[in-house]
Length: 143
Image (cartoon, rainbow, N blue to C red; front, side, top):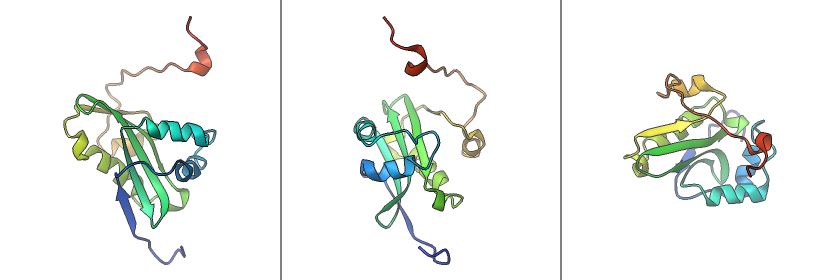
């Protein structure tokens, strides 16, 4: 789309996008470049809630949630196409997730990020960090 024309971004929570559409976005991000089509399909199959941003039929933004719908929810993989960044799309995706009716009983929403400043502006806090991580690649198999 020519830069002088502003497109109408629409948002949807009506199910996940096609894995190939999402993979195009993932390949723009250093943290997701190595993801494959089959792994992305499997990931989407096990995701509880997705929020997509669209420009016509083009997926331009995405976020997903894993949750029990009562106590805890975790936001993962918030990403916006590089050509659409700095237009509030990422913020809108996160706000729509936080205000989603299926998540209205959830007590705590958690996420991992390399951009804490972005999420602090949306009300997230790093003051009560209790998270830990275990990496299969670094720890091998447990016997």
